[in-house]
Amino acid sequence: MSNAYIDEFPAEARIVRAAFYSSFLALALGGVFGIIQTLHRTDFLRFMDSVDYYTVLTAHGVFLVISFTIFFLVGIFTWAITTSLDRGLEDIRFSWGWYSLMAVGITLTGVAILAGFTDATDISASVLFTFYAPLQAHPMFYLGLVLFVVGTWLAGADWFRSWLAWKAENPDERIPLPTFMVLTTMLMWYIATLGVAVAILAFLLPWSLGWIDTVNPLLTRTLFWFFGHPVVYFWLMPAYMMWYVMLPKISGGKLFSDPLARVVFVLFLVLSVPTGIHHQYLDPGIAEGFKFIAMTNTMFLLLPSLLTAFTVVASMEHGARQRGGEGYLGWLKALPWRDPVFTGMALAGLMFAAAGFSGMINAGMNINYLVHNTFWVVGHFHLTVGTAVALTFMAVTYWFLPQVTGRALWNRSVALGQVVLWFIGMTFMSNAMHRGGLLGIPRRTAEPQYEGFEFEAAVGSVAELDAQIALGGVLLTLSLVLFFANVIGTALNGKSDSLPANGYAETLSGPEDAPLVLDNLKLWTAIAVVLVIFAYTFPLLSIIERGGLFGPEVIPFPLTLESVTTVGIALETAATETVDGATLALVGVIR
Ligand code: HAS
Ligand code: CU
Image (tube, rainbow, N blue to C red; front, side, top):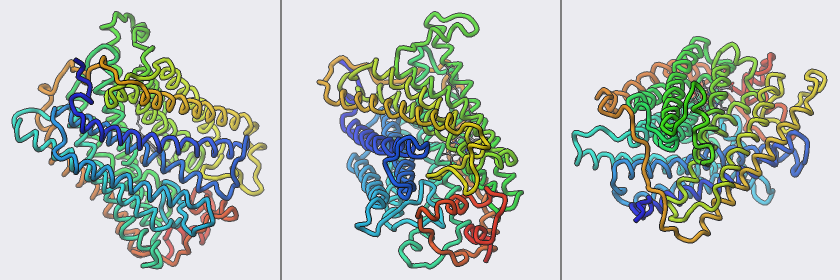
């Protein structure tokens, strides 16, 4: 008798499955837009007109970083809560409620974006996934996002409810580690999404509906980044959860330290939000001192990832030694490299080590001047969300699919090839993007050139970088095709009665070694809120004082080919040395 997840929790397995399939649909769409845009930008194959570039870029960004990641993580969080508390969700209709809200929301947002391709309606939302003013979308885009985010809030409420019910029955027990990780992540998410909720509900949506004429772009932008930085940990923390609770076991060993894992998640809760201004180092209108505080907090925020690198690698080493591995580095050979779940996660981790370094460079106020608004940043986030997170999610899918469908995985060798191909493709693509960025190639442009300035002359060979990016993009697309072959092949497989058991890693040092205070969620939430108040009150007040709550007169920005160069400047103002009056007005520092 197998005890796969679907056998223990059939109703919950349906929710997890629905979340996964929604996430894969978004991945497929996002992937298609990805390859169109890579080949366009690198000038290899042009399927679209440059006029549509921002619509493609918005679709690529929103489908991948909002729908793919978040649908997937609500799936694994549901699994983590039910499995670690060993109880079903309290009311499955409520759970279908939040899932439906998320699905309806993202459909509205997606339709608003895709409508931009046709002139049949006047609906469009080519505002990129960083959808701050002066770019303006159709109200449907914002409304969809609101529903989607409210859906995630209710999902969190669902999981908290399970935990409270469990706690009433087990008053003296420590919070199981996976549940602890879900709850801390959600607390962080509640604080973070306040920023985007205010930005949309108070400003962007009324502005788009025509209820108010103007907004203060710097204000909405700051509120966006209040959410826009911590959202990256909303993607990362579920991936980390899998590195902590699954990777050690698959490596053949145990998790090195449960207490250290708790410390990591507490640090993320406390420090993720008061750092958002590190995306605005080049924004005129925010005083240097506030930027310095954000930088300091960001540097502290490296700590949970460095602790993770230590704990997870130590756990892998423990596993490898259990399997007979020896020597300083020789143990690496004893790891289960033929297992796609392991190899995918390990390669995701390796890439994240590199991503951490590019993140540290981004985070330095002075070095940021060199890389901001260049292709470097695009390289950075394809390593982080595009590999550390996406590759982990794809790798664990190979473990989850049999658990939630009751069917054996279609093909393990294809799965192994898929994760390796992703790693190779991303190595080509993001390395070239980082190098291109250092040479000054801008991001967010269909035609990566400034008028009157030829990169070829300055750089030597843009062609070589372009070739690597295009090659990387093609390999990534092939990798996605293999991924979907496995998802579909598995769904079509017959039911299996010999599924691996559900469960996760044991620990070398368990929760009993963790100080009780670590489980005091109220305390950590209170500290997180205080830090946010410290980091944001004065910058926000000064932005409002100088630019007005609803800002100066700003004309909504139409995205046309003619405005392409200006948009680059408008979005990232001071990336150029000359900040002219018009640009300043756009970021709202002129009254
Ligand atoms: Fe970032 C821009 C700073 C992490 C995503 N980031 C972005 C953007 C995105 C993004 C999407 O300070 C662009 C937004 C836009 O469109 O404008 N980022 C950081 C820092 C970190 C960081 C300091 N970013 C992430 C993560 C993301 C993400 C995670 C998504 C999931 N980022 C910035 C800054 C900018 C920025 C500035 C603005 C740039 C600009 O000018 O516009 C840190 O959290 C990184 C810490 C990571 C480490 C690495 C630890 C290593 C580990 C690996 C262990 C190895 C294993 C494998 C397990 C210190 C944990 C072992 C394998 C064996 C075989 C042994
Ligand atoms: Cu950030």
